[in-house]
Length: 630
Image 1 (spheres, rainbow, N blue to C red):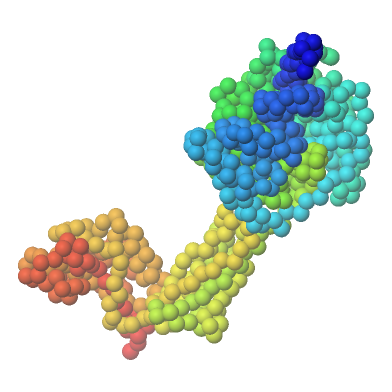
Image 2 (image 1 turned 120 degrees about the vertical axis):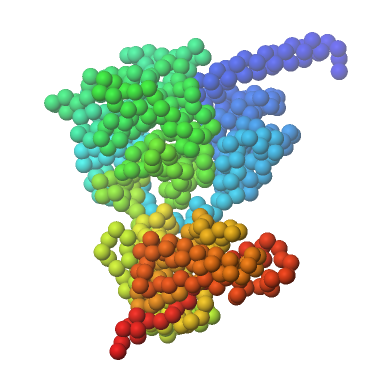
């Protein structure tokens, strides 16, 4: 190459490098301002001139931020091919893979992240989610979901039942202002009324002073319909307010409705700040507890769910709901439905994106959040789950169609069936056995009779507990519990009821009734078994019993006889205290005369062998009806 061209080539190289530096600065600025479409265009131009790893990582993250998952995965995969991704970038790559349903690939990446950072809770949660992915589809028939058609909006989310319709955060179809983040109009609060199940009236802006220049988002309305809490951008008139890092945070506001139906008298929430975001309000049924999402200091990472209580003079200091609810990911869109708190999370057991979860508070502690599964949740962002007044239907929002939309759902409650089998102590079928299921806290009993093969069955109520008793004239009554509490998926509960045949005069060993050496006190472990025996005795009121006690061979024969008698009486007295009729039970001590094993006088035995001989048995001695006959 002629040397006269070298200065020109060098100048071109310097110019290209300078252009890339300027583009990188502009792209980073757009990314930091969440102007993702703009940032993506600049990063793409940089990568056409040079394979810059930092630009590609930010480009992938930008695509992930607004759910362009195919593009995000393409760039993360390029980064991963040259140097395996770990840490936060690895988690983001795996989340994008999960969002595309590529769960095995996501599992491999999460595993790699955990090898490097075993304490990474978000990676732990999502790794378990990817491994157990099929469980999200186990009861997919419980919910029927339909997308609503709402004229006048491009996108909508955060539905709230309001005036025989819905209040929504929505992107109007027509607006003079454009959000540089999404490229669409800024959000407004709008209302719409139902025409059919899926067709609604054109969205109309909420009347009054709530909607302004920038975003107005998710809201909550008091029970009387006169107070509104809503999310909005931090702005004054037409100026967007930003912190030192050039970020504008969300804030929470209150509005009240006047006599004309217009919303006004806007008041800022006391715990807003220009240094963190606060929004996504939810109210308890009595209006005295306000839940919201915030990334304020003191959380567990990202956005957390917090709450304040009405003190009468203002709201209490914000209280974080704790690590059971909140994760290092984002927890958003809390809603209160009855005694349940629903919220969306990018952590926990998760299908991908934001998933809707359910938790309840009892005695100041929150239950482990339960993922509502498919079709409520998908690999996309699913959020703001709210029940209507029927409590068996409601609304949610999701970007499963490519853009935030509102969906109506109806709940088909799970069905439960008991499939039972009655057998004797040798495994034989027991026909013509009466089975009674007593529904606790109710007068609704179910009485069944087993068929020729000992089988019985019946539907069961959801979230209920039963006491089941099986009775036959020649068997000891058997009882157990059957429960559907906490079950959320339709299921058949299989149960085998084993009944002891009545054999007059034949000893039946009572398990786990042991005594300490040279003692006759009832131990804690023995009390549990005696409680079970007490139930057997009280469930068989027509029978009389003998309860016998035995000792090991240590000590004199006479002393052991006295000791065993004391033990038998101790057990019988315990049973009487539990309600057993003293006329139906006698105590008998046999000392060391009937050992369970070879441990007689003069035989060396282990302590375990001696313990086995310190036992208690019972036997049926007769029938009260037979004894009372002339």
